[in-house]
Length: 305
Length: 174
Image (cartoon, rainbow over all chains, first blue to last red):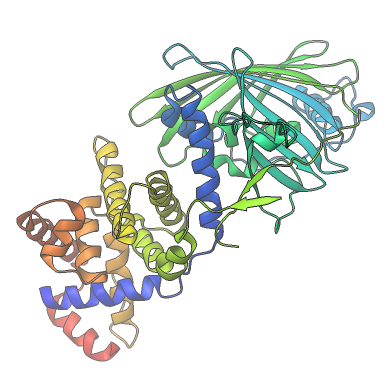
């Protein structure tokens, strides 16, 4: 029986993986993840980075449920409609339009609660925008630029040194001192939030549609607490290594009937630890143009092309 | 625009061995998605130590893959293990040998990761006990005992296939 089991197990394994082939995207994702981790670790934001990265990568505010989707604009909202529908209208009005963003993230359960601030802008009409990641004192460590769908990711920590003798050559521009990652074969329709698996930076979404989508899903508990404020509570869907969690917070809708601010606390229970993270997402300057320049400098070649 | 490539040879390594390693990762985790995650985690560790890994980078990658798979078990060992149902077949026919093989692979995914890792190394990678021990960083005796326990568990989980029936199905399916 044992030999028979061994033979059948061997054959069964071969059959199971017979059609499995790898894609070169795995290499690209790996290098992006590595670059982000390096940048984070070297800037001192590595305090609990591995755990925090896992926590955030688990997708805060992801209820996993099928939602009703976006609703019509604010003008269609009647006084008798539910809080969730009214909030969904504000979310809908905040999508498909340019915006500027400031996102402050404080992993409260981590030692010293290292604060991270993300500032940026995005215009979906031109697929142009940027995100700049910085520590609490404002020192930036990474930047993403999206120009007409072309993405550039820069390491702002390890700048190339300025040559001592610049008599014969002009001094390099700040961009030229940065190592940039760029894949010329790929066009992006938004800033790459789909790199969420890469860790903490990639997991943070500044896209109001993406971030707030979960508030319009059926699993969210929404209550209106004022003329333009809403309280919400959503469950965080279990994922590998994440047993459960929830996000509780408040949304403020601005005078333009678009989402202006989201403040919430996310609690995530992992097998060995619990993470508590405070988020403050501010959205403003809706509809204003977003202009971003392509960088110069050194470009990391991504294998697998 | 100037370019540099800090990971010379990585794309070739993945092109040549990536699918086989992904296959191992799928068997170790039980699913394609989890397998890709595992392989990516191992690749990321390789990239992190790229400059310090001299010589056999594929060997380093394989060892890392298996160690990560086993470590995952360690981090989850306090959680109750949920064993998947392994459905017995109906009446013997020409497809039952195939069903048995599928059930064995399904049952493999329910084993503790160390047993799973040993069985994948021994019966899919076709490594000797000594080679498997080297990959896992344990003794040959540990490989032997772990493989024995794993196979015993597979026999239990597929107990619906009695010896005589199995032999009959084996004859019918091949």
